[in-house]
Image 1 (spheres, rainbow, N blue to C red):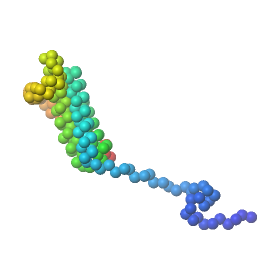
Image 2: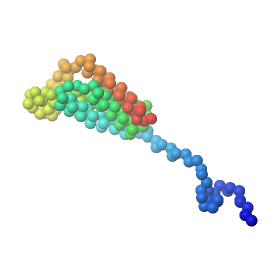
Image 3: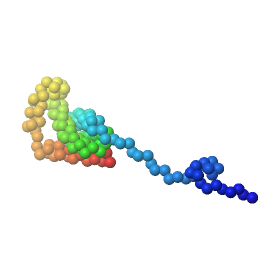
Image 4: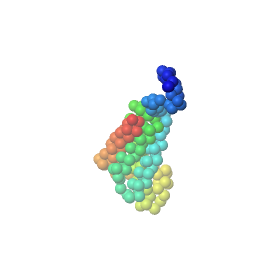
Amino acid sequence: MSQPVPPPSGNPFANGGAPEPYPMAPPPAPVRDNVGLGLLAALVAAILAGVVYGAVMGGIEREIGWAAVGVGFLTGLAAGKVGGRNPVLPIASAVVSLGAVYLGQLIGIAIMAGKELHISASDLFFQEFGLVTEAWNEGKDPLTFLFFALAAFAAFSGAKKASA
């Protein structure tokens, strides 16, 4: 003789200790909507990427378009990953990336001029900043502004993709 089985009571352990299969929803994603931290991350990433861009540019004595894209993308990626989906971050990271590319170009010019003049690039950059910016102004061409546009686009796109 078998014993009668009681109706399910909602207790997962009522059927002999084995839990009944329940569909489990994944936990919600953590909310990341911190504009301040996103802007700070974008600024730090932009400065670091701009310095590296300038060092590479000064080392090979040439501007590189894909490196400017990398500067922008890293800036946007940092902003989006840390700051989340805030609509301010893609725009702010695009603007910050413009400054990073400009910084990188100035550092590259200081390194190239320092090699030529046999002086320290850091001395030239910090003590003769006006000469460095004047050299940048004289050497700019349409390609320079294309690099700015590519970096800003990459930063905007990177921030949008990272926050998705």
